[in-house]
Structures are given as C-alpha cells and as structure tokens.
Length: 479
Image (cartoon, rainbow, N blue to C red):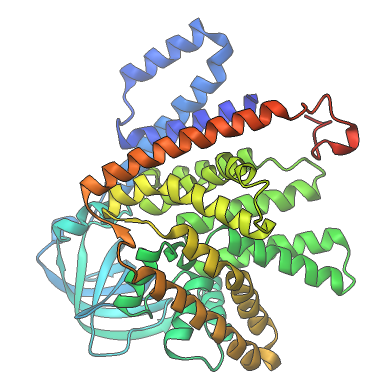
C-alpha cells in the first residue's frame, strides 16, 4: 500500500474520530508515546492526532449557539437564505443564517419556517423577519445539530430587503432558468433534480417512486454530472481550436462553477474535488490516482464538518464509489462470455455493486431497500447522460435553448416513467426486517460464489509480467 494512502487515511480517520470521542490530553499523550516507540508509523500517528484535535475544535464550534438561550422569545431578525426554499404541506422551510437578532449582531445558521401562503423568496435573498425562536422537533434535532443548526426561526411576517447577488446564487439562478427554457410541471422538476439535485418540484408520489425504484440517486448530483460538465467543456474548447492546456483549465473552471451552482452537498463536493484533481494531474504531468483523490475529498469534507461522516449522503456517496472501484470490475468479469453488450454489462455491474454497497446504509437510515435497482438503472441509463448534456447545452446556447429543452423534456418524461413503473411494482422495496435478513443471506451466498468464480478466472489468466507489453493495461510499466 502506498505511503500516501496510509497518511491520508490516518488524517481522515483522525478528523472523523471526534464524532465518537472528543480530543483529550491523556489519549493524545498516549499516541505521542507510540510515535516514539514506533517511529515508522510516527507521521501517520501525528496526522491522526492533528486531525483528531482539529475535528474536535470544529465540532465545538458547530455545537456552540448564541440563539439557543433565546428559545421561546420573539424578535426581529435579518436573515440570509443559503439554499432554495423547500415547500411543504403547511410551511416553506429553508436553511438560513441569522445576521442580526433584535438589533444585536449574530451570525448563526437556523432553520427558517416561512408562511406557505406566499411565494417563497429566491436563494440568496436577505430578509427582514419578525418571528419566534423555537427548539427543533425531536425527529429533526440530531440532523440539524450535525449541520450547526440549533434553533428554528418561525416567521410571522417576511420582507425581502435585497438579493445578495453572490456568485453562487447567480450561477444557481442562471442554471435553473437557462437549462429548462419553456418547460413546466413535472418535466421541469425532473430536469432540475438531475441537473441541480433539487427534488422540491416533484410530487410526493413521484419522489417516493424514485426512491422505491432505486433511481433516486439520479436526483443527487454526483460524479457522473461532473464528468459530463468537465468533459463537455474540454471537448467544446478543443472543437473551437483552443489548446489542450487551456481546455483543461476551462474544464477545471467549469467544475468549480458547477459545484458553486449546485451547492455544498457531500456528493457534489466529493465529485468536484476528484474531478478537479484529475484536471490538475493532467496539467502538472502527474499520474491520476483515483484512490488518493477520493481520500483528499474525504479529508476536505471532514475538515470542514466532521459530523459529515454520519450524514447519509456522505456514506451513500463514498460507499457507491468504493463499490465501483472494488466490486464492479469483478461483476463485469463475471458477465464476460455472456451475450450482453458491453455498455449494458457495465451498467449491470455498476448498478449491482452500488446496490449491494448502499443497501445496509439505506436500511440503517431509511429502513427500506430497493430491490429493482439493476433493471431500473439499466432501463434509465440511455437517457441520463443525454438529459444532462442537453440541459447544459440549452443553458450555454440560448438561441437553441427552447428546442433543446423540448427534446430534453421527452428524456425527463421517460425517466419519470421508469421511476413510476419500477417503483410501482409489487415488492419494489423491502421494509420487513425478516425479509432483509433473508435477502442479506442470499446476497452473501451469491457474493461468495461470484468472488470465488472471479478468483478462478484470474488464476487462468496470464499475469501482467507474462503478457506481451502491448497487451498490458495502460500504466502497468509505471506500476
């Protein structure tokens, strides 16, 4: 194992450790003693210790609240919206930052509840609010605390003071508007879910069908989106005659702009960091290392908020990527020799690997496991990349935007149809503990059989040293 992996893993582990045990002097001295007794592991232990200390400091900052002592009081607040509002049945809710409370300067995140009778203000708006502070409900207290939110501000009157007009807000508003010109209703909502990771416009029934079918991950921006954005930018730049270096720089800029437009979701930041490191590797003439990039992304997320390690989005995102690295190649080899087209075989292998890796996490957090992930993703795969590509082309080519959006509307309708069909089939989801236990037993037996078969297949293949140089995988000589 490369030393850089060990060091990065030690730092990431140290940053996540405070969620279980906060930094204390006595354990730290014990670790320092191990550094003296075990010099070869000294740097890794020191990085883990530094991560533990920094993570504890960050959690102490996130757990601090100036407004918690004001719960139950009413007052006037100046509030900045940090994300698009989500309309519920009775209220509109959005995470925001209180800048001033009752005339006193405060800068603390809150969950803002707005009256549902009026249209919600846009992301980036600064509001003058008259409202009451209350404690979060039991079912949401833990989740909010992990995001540094300790109070709920229930507004009775709201007035938009101004639009902040930050770069992220402008990019988000532009992409939401320009990627779906002329579309309304469900098709627009599906497109915004795929492009921006927002499912607020979907009906509750359709949202549930996406979850039950195993297609809900398409409504969460991930690595596939970043690949389309970066590769599309680079290809367009090369077609315009721009040099490869300038094209890679443009791709790097497009990744940053897309991450800003979508917002700070764990899967988005992970994908953005991995994509940016890939472009930087090409620009600096270094070999791309997907494992190291994944560790760097984990470090960045955990350094900002160690509670992220407990977030379902973080766990699902990293579990899916790890399964693609480790399990998908074996499943793909198991399909060799069968009359399955290569693209379909890749889709089946990746969907199976991700479904197996994320099933325990889905059960832990949501008490439901989708069973039809593989056929649903195989059916939806042909339109996913075109859907995102057409949306981005509509945004950057305004004259052709309405026509591209209408074509894209058919892709969105097809994707929604896949979710409805597979999510509506009997037994699409498992919710019974007994059924989950039986399913887990069957999966373990099947995995053991597939693993053994893969081992035998590898044993029959010549090693990389025995194969001719032209038949070896690219980069084998470097390794």
